[in-house]
Image (tube, rainbow, N blue to C red; front, side, top):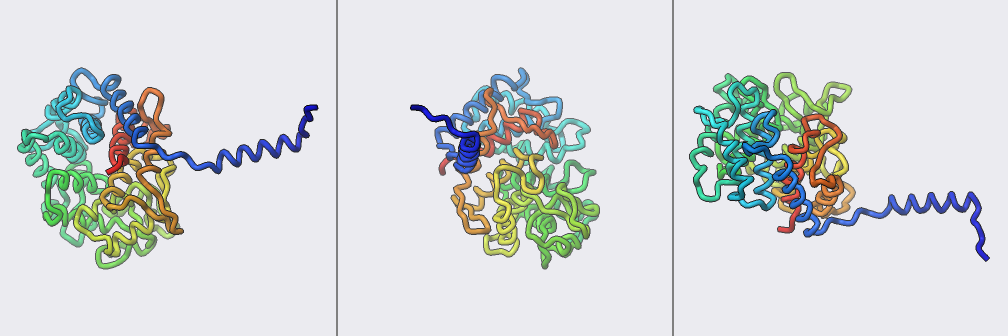
Length: 370
């Protein structure tokens, strides 16, 4: 004889099933699953998004095209594939007499050129782009805030890079400049890299000989924020006493830039940055920013953890994480059926599928086994 359960029993069972479901950790994405997600995302970009002239999101300038080209090559598309060659030709059509890669009159010329340099470096398999690379590198170095802008070593703006010649420097643009210069073979001891290190150190909430700005004293948690220049700013806001709040994407950007500049793992700056990240380890959000800039966060975290050189990353409580597995799982879970990625939060243009998909592909390229 079949017995019906009571309402209380059914309620308890339902609650248990919900709890059990929430308690089961997500299964890590296999390398084959990562490769499948990459292939699906690359197909979306090439077959559904690339225009006849080779561009991606041309209405916003060449930077998204540069990111998409870099993402395609970095994630396995050959540099001589037709889609990559079309994208590269479009990008090179923005070369200017001063060596920059930007649209005439662009207010973001420095940013566009740094991103362009990453694409050129990824595609330069035969040395044919050497001249364009050198000219672009000279251009971004010339725009770096230094004595040429009347900013001596004591100035908070010194060594940084901004969107363009007139804009104040910030950590996001500076990290792209440093990465681009290192990707083309620039030494960590190059004066431009070392000037950038001075700026990066001042974006860290760590008082000491490398940072005497007032912000670090007000929020000495070891993380990084957007800029100490022009009065200082953090996209995550301020503390009650005027300190600049640290957040995830900039902390990974700062850590990566320091390592590219030759700062060692036992340096107090690197130790403080990794300690902050250990306290805020997650791929469910951009710590301090929620879902704002989430895909930028994914790709910056992937690059930073890769250059840090460890397959696992330990939280502050000692729990160790296989970060490549966990990051790829988080990214794949957000992939749409058509292969694209898109952030529901459109801040920093991540509602644009071309941009979000490029960031996701770049991040996944670092998640495959070494």
